[in-house]
Image (cartoon, rainbow, N blue to C red; front, side):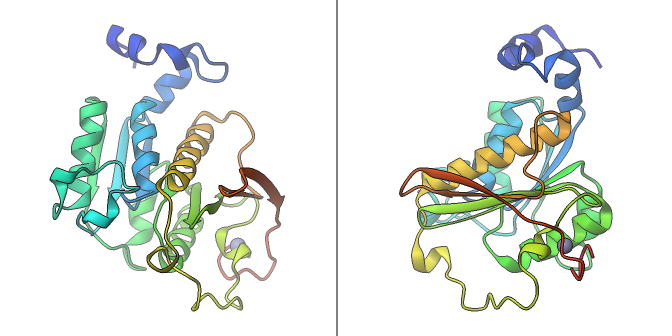
Length: 248
Ligand SMILES: [Zn+2]
């Protein structure tokens, strides 16, 4: 597949980038990325993936747009209240990048459907706001052998990493079943600043592009933590747990 003149101009600033070039751009155009959650993280992640020229973007979300979403969920606008998020998100992504194939999955992933869903994609970008979905998607990606980029944000801070099945730790290695997460705070209680979700959604898109291009050093085996209150980024190495119920 060769690039059209319009694509050459649209992507001119990344075609000259070391690690991308024409071959890399073609690889992105052939890539399929699944974004789980079209909210605070999924909005910037999907936006930047579409802008980068990813060929097909799957969107999983069963929710509709509400007014309280709009401080951070930048794929949706005031005119979208009450509409399914996958619909407003798809419109916005196509308006930005008419070539992108947006595949809407207006559903809640469950244990029965998750593995088949993720297996149809090259990379999964996990953007949900709950542990349950993250555990489900992690297990599905490890079983299907599909790389996973995940992030969590709350308040003024967030954390993220990358799971490359068969090489390094998974999400469950970090949060083994013995860790009690039942009382963990939620964005509804603690709040979330939109720009914090924006930072992590953009970083998730970046990690997905790196995985697809096979360039740079992915965050696999490293937890990136950022406190927006102080501006401090930190990465902490972590290892696969031999007794991990998912990847062990
Ligand atoms: Zn594991």
